[in-house]
Image (cartoon, chains in turn orange, brown):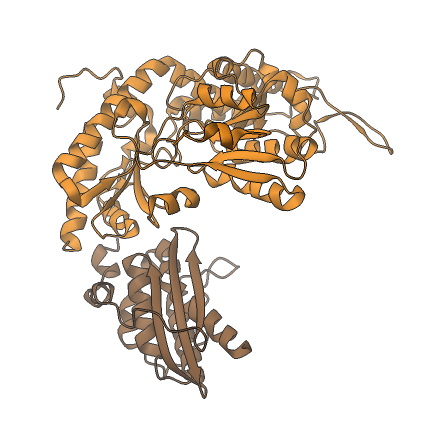
Length: 415
Length: 157
């Protein structure tokens, strides 16, 4: 064990997450798949239950007490999220279903209205499919040109040709942190380069907001997308942050109730920000849960969360390398301070599916597959990896359990 | 609780470590079809040659987990030299075995594909344990679905 004092009290934190008391296959649950979805603390579950048992009503229309409470709960959650990410005003925060919907909103609402045939849109090779496929659709529909910033063998972007790639670009859209390699991208540099080239900057911050202090104003981006369920919040709620200026210049995406000021037989007038983008009854309970998740993370302190994860990632990289040497191949940056707690690896010739099937017998939850990043997997020259990812409730014992499970898989398959 | 031994029978590991009919065939005359498992990124390539209604030759390429690779290996050994009718009956029996736990719409009963009890699955029986691990059923059926597509394309050619 390291002499380093953990900035988080993980023993206490584990008790905040009811699911971690569960037994699987006769042992404790070792959850190492938080890059996929995080577990939920009691405070979030309680907030959702309190909303449904005390204040459930539709928002922005009732004149009775509980409807006012529901509206205040939804808008209160928006304000919490805005403060958490450094937004100037809550109206810059649009609630969506998830980060995927947020990125689709950018490509399909802003993109369709503002891009023309031949306009270059620049992505990176390490993007999640959510930041690739909507642009592919736009390429098929209106003929935008896709360009790719390459990833080097060290897991970092290769920015050698950045100026040429950005020449004439209208959009630069990239992840703040890779969901496969854990690489932290130089967001401010890319944003500045995008603006210098006359492009807008879109950041997929799904893996960043849950783990690292996020300041959208400091980033200087135009759009930032992320999701609630990876940051201790419930599923079914995501966020698109945009500057007031660009949100005003973006036409509505989904349309219907809630997003209108007026509807006639001839047409409609869109509502004000942010409701213009929130058609239909919004995910109210989910927003309340996300607000509680923001409170929970703020209570832990995002500086402490990051420090804990850098330290535990370092422990994991050391442990896996010391125990398995050349048999294990861990992708991504080797320096913990330059990466998040996301570790993709392969072990010998063992297929990741077979590895994680053995892990399951140990209660160790790790994702295997292409992690919705097939472009990157092709660059790495692998079809699939196993991916262990850390969060606030993980400790060195969890990493040790993973290492023991790898040893058992190697024994079982006799490699 | 199903254990690892239910899934990874010795014969499966044998086919995984020493896959049968691994390689390629010139296409044409063979038919080449790629199959993908979108869940895990596994890719399988089936090369199949049909002569006078018989699967005269078959080769398997691609990469994947032990279940998808061993299932492909066993499939290739099982269908080589068989008539298209025999392959059809074998495919039904195999898929019947794999869909044993598929629920019917009313939620209670289980749906079974109509199969010919005379058909012997042989080594393929070893994959029966996969149904206890529902996520892996797609791994086991990938090569069979790819074969079906290849035989359809070969018939159209």
